[in-house]
Length: 263
Ligand SMILES: NC(=O)CCCC(N)=O
Image (cartoon, rainbow, N blue to C red):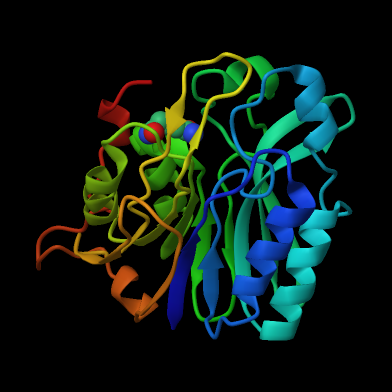
């Protein structure tokens, strides 16, 4: 099974242009699963609620989901991509899952970071897993990584690969995903963006790149540079994420003691 990411540098607000640039990359892809960054078509540093409402789209009938579903069907692959979702008067920081047969579902970011809390509604979808044929994938978005419950919940639901659209600005995620994968015995694909944004007189944000695929044994199978766009794929066997046995006596998920874990 071939999985990977597009590390991308969007131009803020230029949705059609960003979509065109991304789809040009995707037309070259021969893979089973590709992950795109969080908010890949809009950019990240919104300055007002009105701006978010203007740039956000309905799911699945908005242009971004439609375009990605068309490509997924044509290329016979699954795409997980972050986007700003408009649902009535609310906006969510979401990720859509589209496959060879069309739209599969949408995850709404559970843990909003920094000024996202001003413009987005905390996600209400809960963590979800989709069977895409060769594997079961779960989705979390960027800052969700900071909460071990995110990856653990997906692993308990049977996720073998965690698709992780991101706009990372803090340094810790790339190395921390080694632990997330090790403790849950899952693969992860973190698709980060690169570049910087300094809008509306706000402090500039520099995105750290370092997109990566990590194995269930905590090996970094491939990591992108800090800067520059990169399309990268790794051939994996998702079966490596099915057994949670550490040895003849320990099973990572069976041996949990939730009655002793408190809230
Ligand atoms: N967009 C984000 O959720 C950033 C989260 C903080 C980090 N890990 O960079």
